[in-house]
Image 1: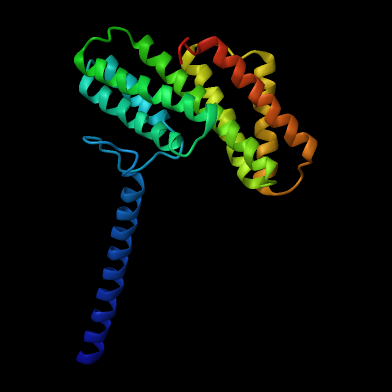
Image 2: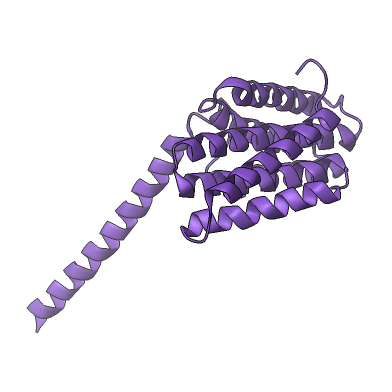
Length: 227
């Protein structure tokens, strides 16, 4: 009886130990993957699945509360998020992400110094960031589609449409009928691509082309000269 009890305890202890080790290994792996995204003093522990939006919202809330240190910290997290994509991008997509990253880093420094007096500057920078992300995901969707990688195309096409929508919201611009239609079409097509059924090549091509056109139009409205 005692031996059975002892063996049971040993088994339970082993299971708990393995679970704890696995969890710790997962956290370490996530942190290692994010090391390239966080510079000195950054405390990013996990990249949000919904992109930089949580960082932007927290930064804006902290700014309103006049907690400039906290606002600056969140902006730096968003800059690190974009930096991660910048390192994997190429061409114009890389250029846009680089410009946005530098703008966010400068904004964080100025917020922490107390030289930013209006939240509109944050809103503009955040809308610029979403333009850069939308262009990046549009570029990735186009590249994946040229390789006939349907699911990858779908994920990036959906991301591009969501980035554009967030960018419009932060800029204060109201989406026109054509923009709304392009976003709707992109999401519809992306869903089919991700699912793996129901799509046709011409439909995908139109979806990518349409969202790319609207992203370029948005950029002309919000992106500052000299970017």
